[in-house]
Amino acid sequence: MNTTLRLCPFILPLALVAGHGAVLTAQARADRGIESIGDPAVVAASASRETVVRLRSLAGFRVDGRVPPVPPMPPLLGSWGSPADFLGSGKDAELRMVGSDGVGHVAKMFVQRSDPGLEFDVSELAGFLAFQGDGAGARQFDLAFDVLEAELEPRIAVTARLVELAAGDGTVAARSEAGRELWSARAVGPAGWPLALSRAELLRYLQDYDVEVAEEAKIAAPITAAAFTGVSVVVIPYVLAGSSDLVLMTQGIVSRPHREIERRRVGVEGVPSLDVPTLEVLAWTSSERIEDGSRSMVGAVALPSDGRSLALVVSAERISARPAAEGLAVLPTTALTSRALQRGYPRCAERSEGWANAALSPTASPDFGDLTEGPGPIEIGRIQDMVQLGLEPWIETTDVHMVGGCLVVTGAAEACAQARRIVAQLEDALLQNSAIEVRVPLGAADAPEAGALLQSVSVPGLKGRTHTVVRGIETLDLDAYYVEIASKSAILNPNVSPVFEGLVATVSLRPGAQESFGSFLVELLESGPVTRRPLEGKDGGDLDIREVAIASFSHDGPIPSGGLVLGDGPEVQRDGRTWRSRVEVRAR
Image (cartoon, rainbow, N blue to C red; front, side, top):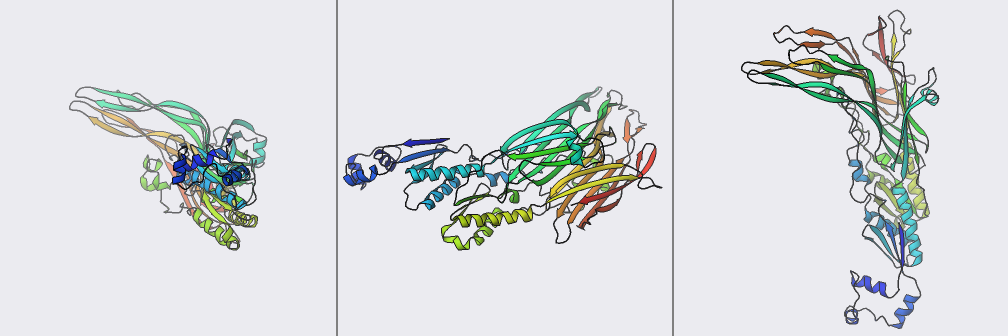
């Protein structure tokens, strides 16, 4: 909103001096040393210039302390947890808050440097930034405000598409172009703000019972739960100072039923059967630097259930204008300072409610220490120090101010260009793309290359960031009973726990002088069939007995150009045969 008031050159200065809009009496003016309104010199000076009040709305800036919502990822069955905190917990939001004092300071410095002789004032007024001065200063104020509004709050449109890949042996990108679109959604928001896109279908099922027992009575009260199927994606887009490129930080989940919900008998008198859903899950975090208007893609080959392969394609484009003003540079830094995706997926031993503590021994999952702990983000103050050091030749005529996660430079055009070059060099060095592919090929004992792929997932990732992918099947097992006892009655209370089979990989790549370096933590879990184990006690009861084979691999060091074979995974039963599995990681 742009509002201009052209006011009487005599009354406005007096009203503002008096404060609160009051008009001073002649005696009050005399007491304060203010010249008489009838003084010919004052009249002549006032008549020679036009006094303008310009009001610009601050509604487009995040100046009210709001924290961007990070939508929680939907609950599944709980076997590997929920990566709800991958994209930050509001710390980035504190950095991105744009204060009205910062906008006012930059606008004031820009107007002052454009003409040091101008007399003007800039202040906040009821949700507006108010300028008072002559017409030339108002035009400079408008120009500075337009640039700040466009660069501090750039609007980004994000589109997500779930595609069923076309059959064939081509690349994931080529197969997605020829594939069938299953879902799409679009969201618009400012850079640095989480944008959520989803479509959910909740499968309600009978999960458990709350057993109550009295002196001579007992009852099982049913408890239902909902399993998520569908797509949920959260994207944080960032703009760059040195180019029109965008950086996308993404996390997502794709879940679909693996088979119909199974009704499983409990085997305890007075306790009805339970429902057991089984889901196929693809979950990931990723990051990528893309050209404005282009796309980032996560692809996964089919699980054995139905032969379908999926790709999640995210594209982004800047839809707000980019006005320019000589002598003013707004340099976004949040792609460098963001805490999003800095820390990887929780390590195996941290999934305390997961498969490791369900039907398996808690010691079945090793703890690899801080392997997945990535380096912390760059502090914006450190970037500001580097910029100021590079502006030494212009230090007396240049102002560098921190506003809403951006460095704002006012001064000579050469100084602004030098500051932009410094930040651009940091972006080029620290925002390098890579691609990560985790593959699990199968081979027969007598023909290792004769089998197909059990798993293959490709995820884009910026070097230096930690990324995670989860791909597999999860279900529930009836693994324990709790005993409820009264004086003349007792009952077994069934307990179900989630079980996961598939791939969990945490990968962090680091740029090297001659080759890439990486830290990997990869787990492959293969589940055998469930065996029903009846209990011989008076009250009966059946337990689910399941064998889960686990292979865990860690690596921290150089990655050969042809990829890295981490080792042999569990044996896999497919089509009545036993296959050997092998875990491979490729990166570029």
